[in-house]
Amino acid sequence: MINKRLLIKNLLAHNDENSFYDKKLKISLDHKEGKAKFLKIVCALANSNLENNSYIVIGVDDEFDKIEGVDFFDDSKIQNLMNSYFNNPPKIQYENIPFPRLPKHKVVGLVTIHPSKKIASLNKNIWKYVKGTVFYRRGSNSLSTLKTFEITESNKAIVEAIEKNASSNIQLTLDGVFDFMNRHKRAYHPTYKVFNEQIVLCWAGKKRVVKGETFYSRVDIELINEQVRLFYSALDEVKIEFDKNSFRITEYVYLGLKKSFDYYPLEKTVMHFKENGKYNIVSELLFEPPQFDKKLLHHVFNNCNAILGKLKKNLPLAESELEDVHEMPTYYLICVLNKIPNAFIRLKESELLLRNLEDKTGYIKYKEAVRILRKVKYR
Image 1 (spheres, rainbow, N blue to C red):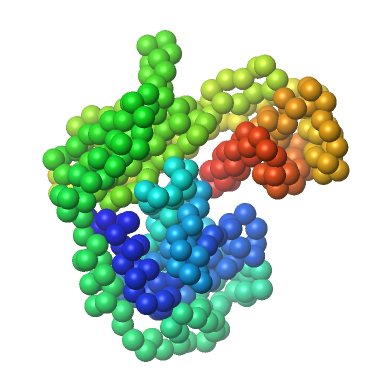
Image 2: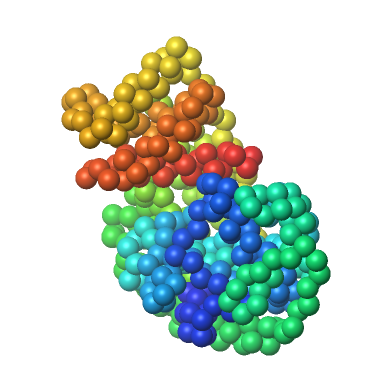
Protein backbone atom coordinates (compact mmCIF):
# COMPACT_ATOMS: atom_id res chain seq x y z
CA MET A 1 0.00 0.00 0.00
CA ILE A 2 1.05 3.56 -0.66
CA ASN A 3 1.01 6.06 2.20
CA LYS A 4 -0.64 8.98 0.41
CA ARG A 5 0.64 11.64 2.81
CA LEU A 6 4.22 10.51 2.18
CA LEU A 7 3.49 10.33 -1.56
CA ILE A 8 2.38 13.98 -1.56
CA LYS A 9 5.53 14.99 0.30
CA ASN A 10 7.65 13.11 -2.26
CA LEU A 11 5.81 14.73 -5.17
CA LEU A 12 6.25 18.22 -3.70
CA ALA A 13 9.94 17.52 -3.10
CA HIS A 14 10.42 16.36 -6.70
CA ASN A 15 11.34 19.62 -8.40
CA ASP A 16 8.34 21.50 -9.79
CA GLU A 17 5.25 20.58 -11.79
CA ASN A 18 6.15 18.33 -14.70
CA SER A 19 4.68 15.89 -17.19
CA PHE A 20 3.40 13.47 -14.49
CA TYR A 21 2.37 15.82 -11.70
CA ASP A 22 0.55 19.12 -11.19
CA LYS A 23 -0.49 21.09 -8.14
CA LYS A 24 -3.31 23.55 -7.53
CA LEU A 25 -4.44 25.74 -4.66
CA LYS A 26 -8.04 24.68 -5.37
CA ILE A 27 -10.35 23.39 -8.09
CA SER A 28 -13.88 24.53 -8.87
CA LEU A 29 -16.31 22.08 -10.45
CA ASP A 30 -19.53 24.05 -10.00
CA HIS A 31 -19.14 26.18 -13.16
CA LYS A 32 -18.13 25.51 -16.77
CA GLU A 33 -14.75 27.29 -16.72
CA GLY A 34 -13.51 25.52 -13.57
CA LYS A 35 -14.78 22.19 -14.82
CA ALA A 36 -13.11 22.69 -18.22
CA LYS A 37 -9.75 23.61 -16.68
CA PHE A 38 -9.84 20.52 -14.45
CA LEU A 39 -10.72 18.28 -17.40
CA LYS A 40 -7.84 19.80 -19.38
CA ILE A 41 -5.24 18.98 -16.69
CA VAL A 42 -6.54 15.43 -16.16
CA CYS A 43 -6.62 14.73 -19.90
CA ALA A 44 -3.14 16.19 -20.46
CA LEU A 45 -1.59 14.11 -17.67
CA ALA A 46 -3.43 10.96 -18.77
CA ASN A 47 -2.32 11.30 -22.39
CA SER A 48 1.30 11.94 -21.42
CA ASN A 49 1.45 8.98 -19.02
CA LEU A 50 0.00 5.97 -20.79
CA GLU A 51 2.05 3.46 -18.74
CA ASN A 52 2.10 4.95 -15.24
CA ASN A 53 0.02 6.88 -12.72
CA SER A 54 0.03 10.67 -12.77
CA TYR A 55 -1.10 13.01 -10.00
CA ILE A 56 -2.71 16.34 -9.13
CA VAL A 57 -2.14 17.70 -5.61
CA ILE A 58 -4.82 20.19 -4.49
CA GLY A 59 -4.47 22.63 -1.59
CA VAL A 60 -0.89 23.72 -2.22
CA ASP A 61 0.27 27.28 -2.89
CA ASP A 62 1.81 27.08 -6.35
CA GLU A 63 4.45 29.76 -5.77
CA PHE A 64 5.84 28.71 -2.39
CA ASP A 65 4.86 25.00 -2.26
CA LYS A 66 3.11 25.79 1.03
CA ILE A 67 0.39 23.33 2.09
CA GLU A 68 -2.77 25.40 2.68
CA GLY A 69 -5.37 22.63 2.52
CA VAL A 70 -8.91 22.56 1.11
CA ASP A 71 -12.32 21.48 2.38
CA PHE A 72 -13.09 17.76 2.49
CA PHE A 73 -14.45 16.75 -0.93
CA ASP A 74 -16.48 13.54 -0.96
CA ASP A 75 -17.83 13.42 -4.51
CA SER A 76 -17.44 9.73 -5.27
CA LYS A 77 -19.12 10.36 -8.64
CA ILE A 78 -16.24 12.45 -10.04
CA GLN A 79 -15.49 9.63 -12.48
CA ASN A 80 -18.87 10.40 -14.09
CA LEU A 81 -17.48 13.78 -15.11
CA MET A 82 -14.67 12.06 -17.02
CA ASN A 83 -17.08 9.63 -18.65
CA SER A 84 -19.36 12.47 -19.76
CA TYR A 85 -16.73 14.56 -21.55
CA PHE A 86 -14.07 12.15 -22.89
CA ASN A 87 -13.59 9.52 -25.50
CA ASN A 88 -11.40 6.88 -23.79
CA PRO A 89 -11.93 8.52 -20.38
CA PRO A 90 -9.08 8.00 -17.91
CA LYS A 91 -9.91 6.35 -14.60
CA ILE A 92 -9.33 8.82 -11.77
CA GLN A 93 -9.61 8.76 -7.99
CA TYR A 94 -9.99 11.74 -5.65
CA GLU A 95 -8.79 11.21 -2.07
CA ASN A 96 -8.67 13.46 1.00
CA ILE A 97 -5.33 13.34 2.82
CA PRO A 98 -5.14 14.74 6.38
CA PHE A 99 -2.00 16.58 7.49
CA PRO A 100 -1.42 17.02 11.25
CA ARG A 101 -0.68 20.75 11.12
CA LEU A 102 -3.81 21.61 9.12
CA PRO A 103 -7.11 22.49 10.86
CA LYS A 104 -9.28 19.43 11.47
CA HIS A 105 -11.72 20.32 8.67
CA LYS A 106 -8.95 20.82 6.09
CA VAL A 107 -7.16 18.20 3.98
CA VAL A 108 -4.96 18.00 0.91
CA GLY A 109 -6.75 16.65 -2.17
CA LEU A 110 -4.96 13.98 -4.19
CA VAL A 111 -6.18 13.08 -7.67
CA THR A 112 -4.67 9.85 -9.00
CA ILE A 113 -4.96 9.37 -12.77
CA HIS A 114 -4.52 5.73 -13.68
CA PRO A 115 -2.95 4.75 -17.02
CA SER A 116 -5.45 3.71 -19.71
CA LYS A 117 -3.01 3.11 -22.64
CA LYS A 118 -5.44 5.01 -24.89
CA ILE A 119 -5.50 8.67 -25.92
CA ALA A 120 -8.39 10.62 -24.36
CA SER A 121 -10.13 13.40 -26.28
CA LEU A 122 -13.13 15.64 -25.67
CA ASN A 123 -16.36 14.18 -27.02
CA LYS A 124 -18.23 17.51 -26.81
CA ASN A 125 -17.60 21.22 -26.41
CA ILE A 126 -17.01 22.76 -22.98
CA TRP A 127 -16.16 26.40 -22.28
CA LYS A 128 -13.62 27.43 -24.97
CA TYR A 129 -12.47 23.86 -25.72
CA VAL A 130 -14.01 22.19 -28.77
CA LYS A 131 -15.05 18.62 -29.42
CA GLY A 132 -12.14 16.43 -30.54
CA THR A 133 -9.46 18.38 -28.64
CA VAL A 134 -6.57 16.30 -27.27
CA PHE A 135 -4.57 17.70 -24.34
CA TYR A 136 -1.01 16.67 -23.46
CA ARG A 137 1.96 17.83 -21.34
CA ARG A 138 5.24 19.36 -22.26
CA GLY A 139 7.07 19.77 -18.96
CA SER A 140 4.75 21.74 -16.67
CA ASN A 141 2.57 23.07 -19.51
CA SER A 142 -0.73 21.54 -20.64
CA LEU A 143 -1.08 21.96 -24.41
CA SER A 144 -3.86 21.12 -26.87
CA THR A 145 -4.18 19.88 -30.43
CA LEU A 146 -6.83 18.59 -32.83
CA LYS A 147 -4.22 16.34 -34.44
CA THR A 148 -1.98 13.54 -33.20
CA PHE A 149 1.00 14.26 -30.96
CA GLU A 150 4.17 12.42 -30.08
CA ILE A 151 5.09 11.32 -26.54
CA THR A 152 8.76 12.21 -26.24
CA GLU A 153 9.55 10.56 -22.90
CA SER A 154 8.35 7.88 -20.50
CA ASN A 155 7.84 8.68 -16.83
CA LYS A 156 7.27 5.07 -15.79
CA ALA A 157 10.59 4.49 -13.99
CA ILE A 158 10.63 7.75 -12.04
CA VAL A 159 6.96 7.51 -10.97
CA GLU A 160 7.41 3.92 -9.82
CA ALA A 161 10.44 5.00 -7.77
CA ILE A 162 8.46 7.82 -6.11
CA GLU A 163 5.59 5.45 -5.32
CA LYS A 164 7.98 2.82 -3.93
CA ASN A 165 9.53 5.40 -1.61
CA ALA A 166 6.04 6.19 -0.33
CA SER A 167 5.21 2.59 0.61
CA SER A 168 3.45 2.17 3.94
CA ASN A 169 5.18 0.36 6.79
CA ILE A 170 4.52 -0.65 10.40
CA GLN A 171 5.95 2.58 11.85
CA LEU A 172 3.85 4.83 9.60
CA THR A 173 0.74 2.78 10.41
CA LEU A 174 1.30 2.87 14.18
CA ASP A 175 2.13 6.58 14.08
CA GLY A 176 -1.09 7.14 12.14
CA VAL A 177 -3.20 5.29 14.73
CA PHE A 178 -1.63 7.16 17.67
CA ASP A 179 -1.99 10.48 15.84
CA PHE A 180 -5.70 9.82 15.18
CA MET A 181 -6.44 8.73 18.75
CA ASN A 182 -4.62 11.75 20.21
CA ARG A 183 -6.37 14.23 17.88
CA HIS A 184 -9.87 13.22 19.01
CA LYS A 185 -11.23 13.86 22.47
CA ARG A 186 -12.54 10.95 24.53
CA ALA A 187 -16.09 12.30 24.10
CA TYR A 188 -15.80 11.43 20.40
CA HIS A 189 -15.02 7.77 21.17
CA PRO A 190 -11.95 7.33 18.90
CA THR A 191 -11.80 3.67 17.83
CA TYR A 192 -9.66 1.50 15.59
CA LYS A 193 -10.16 -1.90 13.98
CA VAL A 194 -7.84 -4.16 11.99
CA PHE A 195 -9.37 -5.98 9.02
CA ASN A 196 -7.80 -9.20 7.68
CA GLU A 197 -4.74 -8.57 9.89
CA GLN A 198 -3.55 -5.90 7.44
CA ILE A 199 -5.83 -2.89 7.02
CA VAL A 200 -6.40 -0.45 9.89
CA LEU A 201 -9.46 1.82 10.05
CA CYS A 202 -9.96 4.53 12.66
CA TRP A 203 -13.16 6.46 13.34
CA ALA A 204 -14.51 8.94 15.87
CA GLY A 205 -17.76 10.80 16.45
CA LYS A 206 -20.30 11.92 19.02
CA LYS A 207 -22.38 8.87 19.86
CA ARG A 208 -26.16 8.96 20.20
CA VAL A 209 -28.50 6.01 20.72
CA VAL A 210 -31.99 6.31 19.19
CA LYS A 211 -34.48 3.43 19.65
CA GLY A 212 -31.65 0.99 20.26
CA GLU A 213 -29.60 2.10 17.23
CA THR A 214 -26.29 3.96 17.52
CA PHE A 215 -25.63 7.05 15.40
CA TYR A 216 -22.62 9.33 15.24
CA SER A 217 -22.29 13.04 14.44
CA ARG A 218 -19.15 15.09 13.72
CA VAL A 219 -17.73 11.92 12.22
CA ASP A 220 -14.13 11.44 11.11
CA ILE A 221 -13.06 8.16 9.44
CA GLU A 222 -9.53 7.39 8.19
CA LEU A 223 -7.89 4.50 6.37
CA ILE A 224 -4.63 4.58 8.32
CA ASN A 225 -2.43 2.43 6.05
CA GLU A 226 -2.88 4.88 3.17
CA GLN A 227 -3.37 7.98 5.35
CA VAL A 228 -6.66 8.74 3.57
CA ARG A 229 -9.64 10.45 5.18
CA LEU A 230 -12.65 8.47 3.96
CA PHE A 231 -15.36 10.55 5.58
CA TYR A 232 -15.70 13.83 7.45
CA SER A 233 -18.83 15.74 8.39
CA ALA A 234 -19.56 18.49 10.88
CA LEU A 235 -23.33 18.05 10.60
CA ASP A 236 -24.62 14.70 9.39
CA GLU A 237 -25.76 11.74 11.44
CA VAL A 238 -23.93 8.56 10.45
CA LYS A 239 -24.61 4.91 11.20
CA ILE A 240 -21.50 2.69 11.33
CA GLU A 241 -21.64 -1.10 11.01
CA PHE A 242 -18.91 -3.67 10.38
CA ASP A 243 -18.03 -7.34 10.35
CA LYS A 244 -14.72 -9.11 9.75
CA ASN A 245 -14.72 -8.42 5.98
CA SER A 246 -16.58 -5.12 5.55
CA PHE A 247 -17.15 -1.65 6.97
CA ARG A 248 -20.43 0.16 6.24
CA ILE A 249 -21.26 3.86 6.54
CA THR A 250 -24.85 5.05 6.13
CA GLU A 251 -25.15 8.83 6.02
CA TYR A 252 -28.30 10.74 6.97
CA VAL A 253 -29.19 14.41 6.37
CA TYR A 254 -31.37 16.52 8.63
CA LEU A 255 -33.90 18.45 6.54
CA GLY A 256 -37.17 20.28 7.12
CA LEU A 257 -39.04 23.58 7.31
CA LYS A 258 -39.42 25.66 10.45
CA LYS A 259 -39.84 23.17 13.34
CA SER A 260 -40.70 20.16 11.19
CA PHE A 261 -37.32 18.46 10.58
CA ASP A 262 -36.48 14.81 10.04
CA TYR A 263 -33.56 12.53 9.13
CA TYR A 264 -33.35 11.22 5.57
CA PRO A 265 -30.88 8.53 4.43
CA LEU A 266 -28.47 10.04 1.89
CA GLU A 267 -25.87 7.46 0.91
CA LYS A 268 -24.48 4.09 1.95
CA THR A 269 -20.78 3.34 1.44
CA VAL A 270 -19.38 -0.16 1.88
CA MET A 271 -15.71 -1.12 2.06
CA HIS A 272 -15.02 -4.77 1.20
CA PHE A 273 -11.68 -6.11 2.45
CA LYS A 274 -9.99 -8.95 0.57
CA GLU A 275 -7.59 -11.59 1.88
CA ASN A 276 -4.73 -10.27 -0.28
CA GLY A 277 -4.72 -6.90 1.52
CA LYS A 278 -6.68 -5.07 -1.16
CA TYR A 279 -10.12 -3.53 -0.83
CA ASN A 280 -12.84 -1.90 -2.88
CA ILE A 281 -15.39 0.79 -2.06
CA VAL A 282 -18.96 0.78 -3.33
CA SER A 283 -21.40 3.66 -2.78
CA GLU A 284 -25.17 3.64 -3.20
CA LEU A 285 -27.26 6.81 -3.20
CA LEU A 286 -30.34 6.29 -1.02
CA PHE A 287 -31.73 9.82 -1.05
CA GLU A 288 -35.37 10.46 -1.87
CA PRO A 289 -35.97 14.25 -1.74
CA PRO A 290 -38.72 15.17 0.76
CA GLN A 291 -41.70 16.86 -0.89
CA PHE A 292 -43.47 19.80 0.73
CA ASP A 293 -46.60 21.84 0.11
CA LYS A 294 -45.85 24.24 -2.78
CA LYS A 295 -47.73 27.15 -1.18
CA LEU A 296 -45.66 26.81 1.99
CA LEU A 297 -42.46 26.48 -0.05
CA HIS A 298 -43.15 29.69 -1.97
CA HIS A 299 -43.72 31.51 1.32
CA VAL A 300 -40.40 30.17 2.71
CA PHE A 301 -38.61 30.97 -0.57
CA ASN A 302 -39.84 34.58 -0.56
CA ASN A 303 -38.82 34.98 3.08
CA CYS A 304 -35.29 33.74 2.27
CA ASN A 305 -35.10 36.13 -0.66
CA ALA A 306 -36.04 39.03 1.65
CA ILE A 307 -33.25 38.07 4.08
CA LEU A 308 -30.81 37.68 1.17
CA GLY A 309 -31.76 41.16 -0.05
CA LYS A 310 -31.03 42.65 3.37
CA LEU A 311 -27.65 40.89 3.53
CA LYS A 312 -26.74 42.28 0.10
CA LYS A 313 -27.58 45.82 1.27
CA ASN A 314 -25.93 45.28 4.67
CA LEU A 315 -29.20 46.08 6.45
CA PRO A 316 -29.90 44.87 10.03
CA LEU A 317 -31.98 41.70 10.38
CA ALA A 318 -35.01 41.32 12.61
CA GLU A 319 -34.74 38.85 15.51
CA SER A 320 -36.78 36.21 13.66
CA GLU A 321 -34.62 36.71 10.56
CA LEU A 322 -31.44 36.14 12.58
CA GLU A 323 -32.71 32.62 13.32
CA ASP A 324 -33.79 31.98 9.73
CA VAL A 325 -30.47 33.11 8.22
CA HIS A 326 -28.78 30.02 9.71
CA GLU A 327 -31.31 27.73 8.00
CA MET A 328 -31.47 29.71 4.75
CA PRO A 329 -29.19 27.29 2.80
CA THR A 330 -31.28 24.33 3.99
CA TYR A 331 -34.50 26.08 2.93
CA TYR A 332 -33.03 26.95 -0.47
CA LEU A 333 -31.85 23.32 -0.82
CA ILE A 334 -35.39 22.04 -0.18
CA CYS A 335 -36.73 24.53 -2.72
CA VAL A 336 -34.22 23.27 -5.32
CA LEU A 337 -35.19 19.66 -4.62
CA ASN A 338 -38.86 20.63 -5.02
CA LYS A 339 -38.12 22.42 -8.32
CA ILE A 340 -38.90 25.98 -7.20
CA PRO A 341 -37.65 28.25 -10.05
CA ASN A 342 -34.41 30.22 -9.36
CA ALA A 343 -33.84 28.52 -5.99
CA PHE A 344 -30.38 27.27 -7.00
CA ILE A 345 -29.40 30.75 -8.25
CA ARG A 346 -30.40 32.28 -4.91
CA LEU A 347 -28.51 29.56 -3.02
CA LYS A 348 -25.31 30.37 -4.95
CA GLU A 349 -25.81 34.10 -4.35
CA SER A 350 -25.83 33.45 -0.60
CA GLU A 351 -22.36 31.86 -0.49
CA LEU A 352 -20.14 34.92 -0.08
CA LEU A 353 -22.66 36.74 2.13
CA LEU A 354 -22.87 33.80 4.55
CA ARG A 355 -19.11 33.32 4.50
CA ASN A 356 -18.61 36.94 5.60
CA LEU A 357 -20.93 36.67 8.62
CA GLU A 358 -19.25 36.42 12.02
CA ASP A 359 -21.37 33.37 12.89
CA LYS A 360 -20.33 30.70 10.35
CA THR A 361 -23.31 28.37 11.00
CA GLY A 362 -25.09 29.47 7.82
CA TYR A 363 -21.95 29.08 5.72
CA ILE A 364 -21.33 25.55 7.04
CA LYS A 365 -24.91 24.65 6.11
CA TYR A 366 -24.40 26.24 2.68
CA LYS A 367 -21.46 23.90 2.00
CA GLU A 368 -23.57 20.98 3.20
CA ALA A 369 -26.41 21.95 0.84
CA VAL A 370 -24.06 22.17 -2.16
CA ARG A 371 -22.52 18.80 -1.26
CA ILE A 372 -25.94 17.12 -1.21
CA LEU A 373 -26.91 18.68 -4.54
CA ARG A 374 -23.63 17.53 -6.08
CA LYS A 375 -24.38 13.94 -5.04
CA VAL A 376 -27.97 14.08 -6.29
CA LYS A 377 -26.90 15.61 -9.61
CA TYR A 378 -24.90 12.52 -10.61
CA ARG A 379 -27.65 10.14 -9.56
